Image (spheres, rainbow, N blue to C red):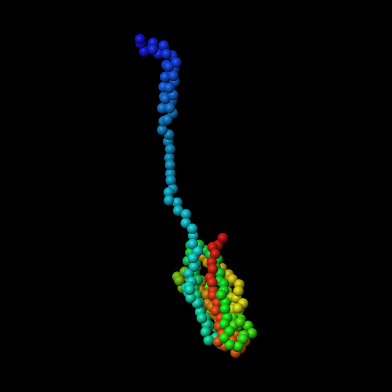
Length: 198
């Protein structure tokens, strides 16, 4: 029996085989190569900025006025504050931790009420690192009043990255301080703060 006769005797089987063959041919034709392209940007890194501060007298007193006399010239001390971070920040100064000691005759007011304090911003350091001069017309007063009354936070403005300022502190005993203040003292802490700009 010839092959053609076998196909005729089983027409359903023949049609199924033909359909399968045509489907396979269609898949082969439709799966030809397509043009494509791809480009990548690897290793994208996301890093937070920093806001750090340098205090030239960190962990130490700015100054320690001693043997103060009523009406005598003020004693001074300086400190340099810098923004060492990668972000600009709004800087401020506050005084806290105030305590007065009364060693003799009872004082009519705490010793700190008789200590006159002046804080000035002498200006920013020059680009070459040159320190600003204190005591000239370029000084900006941060605070002037008694040590006892210094309770508000002092705004210092915005410091750009790398910006450094010198501050001069001065303290003098009021001429109105009487004998009852002899040997008395006060201590206080100064705190520098910075917050990132909006």
